[in-house]
Image 1 (cartoon, rainbow, N blue to C red):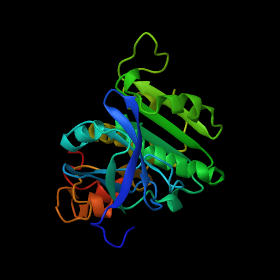
Image 2 (cartoon, rainbow, N blue to C red):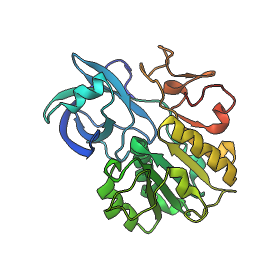
Image 3 (tube, rainbow, N blue to C red):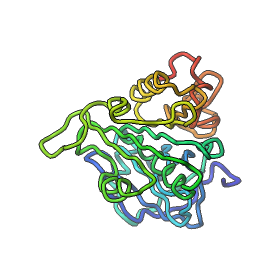
Image 4 (cartoon, one colour):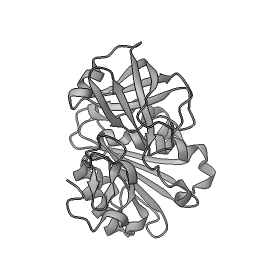
Length: 275
């Protein structure tokens, strides 16, 4: 982390890869090597427009480039989606706390993502695969609204599903004539016919829209995961990134400073967790 949290590292936008009609992956080249841990986030600064928090989707082992997978949902993200390669931007961070990999080692890891929530989970997956002998099994269950809304679809089909250490399954809420996989929300593929997992000893990681995380958490509790073994990426309402604005408060915590990664056990008793 930079000594001055408020001074961004200059970065150059090397390229933009369209993932879905509303989501693109931005490849940034920093002026100096940039290091982060899976689950941490950064503030991307667009001069003259503003800044916004995003969790990297690239491998933490890559320090010469960083990828941010961003949905076009607001003023700053709309401006970012209009940019072309070569634009100079700024990057603050890394900020927040990462996934606690030391608690995952030696255990089966179930990763459940929804929509653009697969972005930070992709960074986690790279980190797990970098030391895959430490994990007896890595399971990925991902849900998207339609086949056209599947993020990293080519990578999933050509790399993830061919990796012997990975068990990968994708569902869509609404299929089309080309879709041959399961149809239904992501909890559909957490049913026994689609999932065999170590609920007694494994850990689970969830990232996606709040409603998806809520019902996925409830499903995992029903399956037998305990609250201390369910980890959530709570990126709701983050703004300043350093716990000063108060927008991202969850009970006694600030998502940006104390998270964004929390165990469900930490936050389960606070009201409006999923708002």
